[in-house]
Length: 282
Image (cartoon, rainbow, N blue to C red; front, side, top):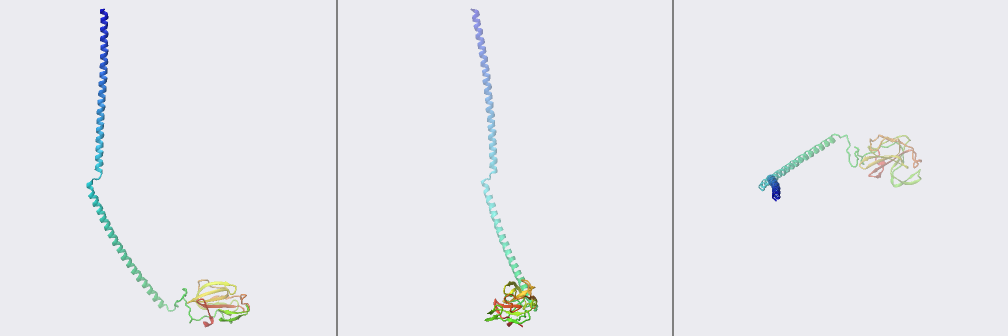
């Protein structure tokens, strides 16, 4: 009985000892956990404090960079200065434009004076060059001007086979008809030189079935002379010819003038109206 009772006591003591050890171990574990939690909380608080401090620093920095309301007058002052500067620039521009306008006026006056001086020189040169004929009317710049008081040279020396007549008709032997004649037909041997009756510019060189090759010379003041039945033409369009210079030779007559024989058909017009060439011959 005593042994059983002692054994029970021993078991109870061991059980109490194990339980105490477990309790102590559990207590230590709990204490360690609490300590870790406290440490983490402290670290979190420190991190939160540092974060808040950094945010506050950043806010203060941004506030310092942001213009304050007290800077507005300075901005207005700058704007006013800019407006004043612009005003000065405009005034300067106006002054510059005024100077340019004055310079242009001076230049125009100078040009006008130069032009007048040039015209005066030209007038003086023209008055000194008394040998040069005066160009007038529609003289087309030839340097020559024919008028009703001037005379014509005969293109070839020969008989007048067909006379000028625009008031009545005359007989054309080859054609066998009576009709008006706006020019004259002057007999001449084939190959005979044909001269310019007056000075002027060769206006055109044409040809047709009736008159063959034709040279028309513009003599100025509306006067033109046409030379038909030509060959070996020695002038060109636009060329200036002098009275008496050779412009070609007499060609064989066309089929319109076979019975009249070889010669030159000469026509004079004033403003495209036929005139009697014989009224101007020397």
